Image 1 (cartoon, rainbow, N blue to C red):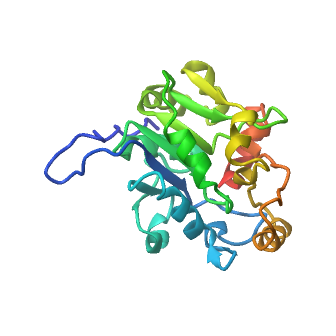
Image 2: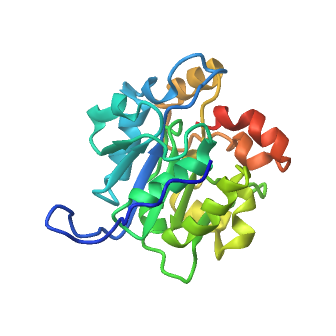
Length: 245
């Protein structure tokens, strides 16, 4: 299926606010088979994860998007809800939809299962100026995190081509565009224990996060990459794609 035409996002009109410096999108609506429940609505620190995330995101932008099947379920956090323009195509389609709808030329894209976002790190990323199309965090073990990254609208064309070809792995995008890596040493200036990159896939992960939410600031988990970070085989990616959200 060909991608739907990208809306003309970001143009000012009587009905459209002036573009913020950056937009942000939380990708929702995944199957969450290993967790057995909607991860975005699970409680950590007394709040739904998505509410915690929205609060952190609002420190850097007023343009919050909720992207994915049934996104209207999360309307209580505010923001604009939209289904994927290309259904059943995983996080890459979510990135495409976010960029197509964002009011800003750049969009921070996040998975919905990251309860420990760091506002200082988000601010550092959003203020980083350079000639890049993707700003991609790289953790101490060398893994990257595609769903805590900033993408520019220049990625829309390459992503459209990938979706048309059935290539759904974000890792295949980065060689095609100007990708700048946010190295671990830079991340550590704001988030020395890399808590931002903790993601929840199982009930055990959730229990650990709930306990950790009350721990001192020194606490940290080794960042456990999601399937989109660790697999290089597109076959494996397609198998794991529903677990990435």
